[in-house]
Image (tube, rainbow, N blue to C red; front, top):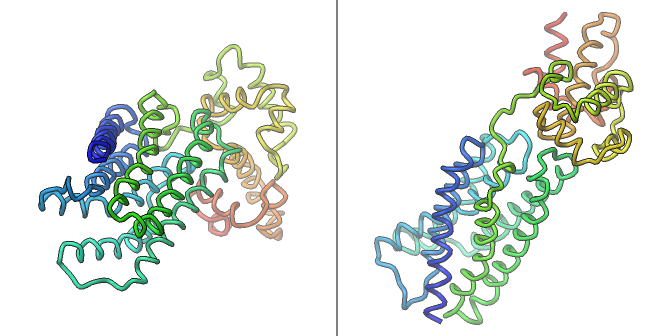
Length: 347
């Protein structure tokens, strides 16, 4: 068992080092590379800490790895959000949630090394609940945007990522809640073994060359009228049909329009249409693409003084938005101000 323990931990640490190197070398300047490096380094701390008594670390290294692994789940969460969430940007609420989640874990580590008093037991339950909530949020984000994702490699990766995430979360929970009491001498080895497949899967995913799944910050979005020169000869007829569907048929007015439905209407595969919109127009997400046309139409309505009496919600619903909240967000993303501010400024 001692040999197995060493093999699992050393192989995982080696893969994580290569992941950090690959993040710096291969996927910069994507918005994900720094989070992958931080997640890899923090996970190295996890595997250094998951050691048996026979392989105990020197006190200094144990101290460093003990605190290094505290935010590992937060960094994994941020990395996955940066990959799978359209227009992800680190915000104050990400930082606040990270601090709230990691504070009790820092307290546990400080107690472990004799630096503070023992934390209350209920914090252990709080950390477990927080871990589950983080993973549930991550699963929701990954699944929610799947159908609208225009980045083909990233779209294919979503279900695999969710599957590995759920499997590791369940196995880790079993170890923490049950096996650590039943087999305390082997709990760390079992926990390392449950995390190892996720590290292996992540290494294969990134090292095999899935760079297309990582979107560079602020992709340049181009309007249909300016993208003609960017379209390849084989896609020009499809591009013309797409232009017609937007400019003449105004398919963006349909709040239920999906890329699968549009591809069917245009007589092409979803894969080909996704590639055209993503590569020629610079959009990551199909709703993002539709919203650009919706906002353009709404601006014309706002700029006509005869429409000043029409409520903003009515205009939004008439132009394909399902409710006010996503409209306000889409409008501010594109125009840099709220619809109300735009209307007042125009007046």
